[in-house]
Amino acid sequence: MTLKIGIVGATGNVGREMLSILAEKGFKSENIFPIASSRSEGMKVSFGESEIVVSSLEKFNPKEIQIALFSAGGEISKEWAPKFANAGCIVIDNSSHFRMDPDVPLIVPEVNADALSGYKKKNIIANPNCSTAQLLVALKPLHDINTIKRVIVSTYQSVSGAGKEGMDELFNQSRKFFANDVLDNVKFTKRIAFNVIPHIDKFMDDGYTKEELKMQQECHKMLDANIKFSATCVRVPVFIGHSEAVTIEFENKMTVADAHAALKAAPGCSVLDDRKDGGYVTPIECAGNDDTYVSRVREDTAFENGLSIWVVSDNLRKGAALNAVQILELLKEKHLN
Image (cartoon, rainbow, N blue to C red; front, side):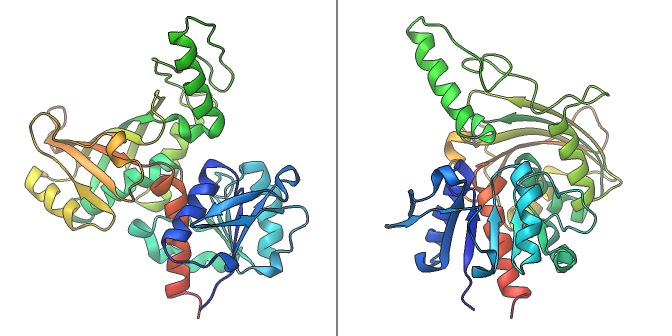
């Protein structure tokens, strides 16, 4: 089945990554429609070896395509995703706007592919938070063999998660630091160059941030609502790749050997866990790769049935663009005939 696919937000970081992945997977340029705001109308974006002209969102007719991948922010999704869906186009949305809607499936294909069957209620499918996606790829195979009771996670999130402006701010501040120039904070609340910021998204009344709340809610919706969950989300001066230090409490004892076996057999998951210098994965190694990498697997000393792991993934790929394309492929294989 030949699908015509729109990319809404095609000129942004994630939109460009979506185009790159679709090209890698052999989709044809004549079936791809890059879409952005009117100020980007007429510009060209790369698609494999070719270039495609960007259409204006305001002028584009959604009836020309069967599926639209949205990555243009929550406000754009709020206004335009229902318009595309009502025109018969299936929307896969990367924003947080629809994630907790009970009539919208929230999908990581390796975790809860069966939930995709509910997409027809609104013709919209939600992509999870980038940090949640990689975390659940690692938690799912462990939960399947030994029920998880509690998760405590600290994230180390790259600036690309804040868009091109975040990457530009890290680059410019780093350059100005060595030139002994003034470092302005525009995108972030404090200096990001050579610093870490324990604050992503808005603060809630209980002291957690919205980013931390998203991870909790999405874990409950996709994996298990009974898991006790706490997150601390931190922005770090890394361009691409999110890292997570995760402590897990299980119902029964979980050995390192059993965890290794489950993780190695899981789709989308790779284990590199050598107890020696360099025997682990960092963001630099994961950038540009599809898998979620797990390292530093060890029995936790604070919980009787605990395990601690280190999880790393390319946030622009598995955390956003790749996951959306995997949902598209799952739709095509299982639901569109």
